[in-house]
Image (cartoon, rainbow, N blue to C red; front, side):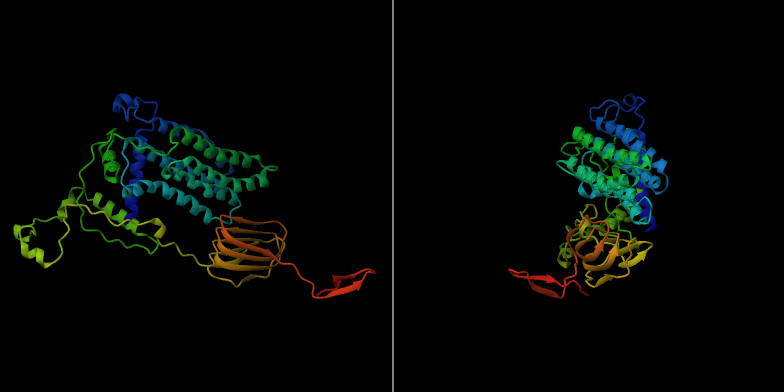
Length: 431
């Protein structure tokens, strides 16, 4: 696994290096490298426009995050890295033709890794005083996936922006009358997605358009370009013959796509040694010259032809397993990762306590007594029964949720004649 991680880090560094080769828009790139896709100066207009977004709203968000310091500052640095990874990808799009689906997954991995890092940081810091700030970023950062949306990526970013607003409204509620630094932070963060929508509308209304004249994008061609130090992409290299697949110790949580990428990087790192695994085949070992071999069994796959592995869908990959949790942490009841549990009960509640229910599926929770507030987040087919809540019960990113509030029903009634008819009322003293 350590070798696999090193190989993936190598690709990330390679993409960042490609970005740096073209990042200085003030030098005369056009004289040194010529034009790319008919654009003088070597950088496509939409890449330059993305740079303006980075130097504008993203930079402002970073400044406001540094003022707040702590978890917010750390989270913001992750956001910056994610945008830099996207900028490098846009640069590739401007110079290469669209790759095959298997190669696309590898080229997108630096961005997806940054998104995952941002979301993991939020999950690991649920006790943070800035949890609403972290949630606003974590819930909306998938907006960077607009590069895979077609034909209209703009509305997708709008949806992610709405997800952020849910949490930024909480931030404003907590700080608008006490600390305006948080208000500035909210404005600068939401402005990023507003400007990104405007950017997409101007340059990518129907989605990304890859270069029509450059070589087909692939891991091999990108690494070759960086190694050569050339400004323009070289002709695509001939297909590499597959060698014996390397063996890696993989965790149960890794899917088949990770193994395929590991094999790809292992082959790339062999360099000229990749042909050492091939041997000379004599005429008596060739099936087309020896009919007896053909009769012995099925034809052998030629080592000189590449075979596309069966596609694997990320949706079918095994999900990480979490231990179910039901505990009181400070003043917060944490109910997490409960599956098919219909006997969950919390009895020792207090007025100052809150309940946070996260990723519970096909389960039912009963809360007795009075509690401050209840939040249901990322749950499916979940039932909640409670006695009394001082604040609110809110449901976030969930579906098939059933909620009921229990009221006592009098067990005794009295009936009296009011002079014209019988009137039945609950008894005044009930248990």
